Image (cartoon, rainbow, N blue to C red; front, top):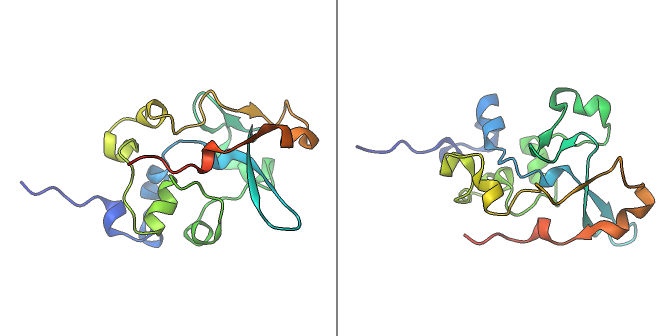
Length: 153
């Protein structure tokens, strides 16, 4: 029996249904981490300081539907944004599909389990502090490299 080609291999981001778009998120939570940008060079530095709406255990937004109203600097992902944002992690499924690459083995659409992203050490679970607990002037003390490391295939 022939296996059906998965939607992320045969569709461009713009062609995804809302359900497919939402399913593409791997639940890593890396996009919910605050980043610092150097004013002079434009260089992005990652912190492990998560958005105030971020639920570290679930690796999801606590108020996804209203996040833009609550956190005005939250940047919702769209096909256009995915292609323009330079800071999306190399493991981000949206970025991978936009670049014509396949999903990693730990992605739930490949593995069949939403736990493999955590088991593989890709998610932010257990690695963040909330921006509610860290003044913005102290974020430089929370710089991390792991969100931009390329995972092993």
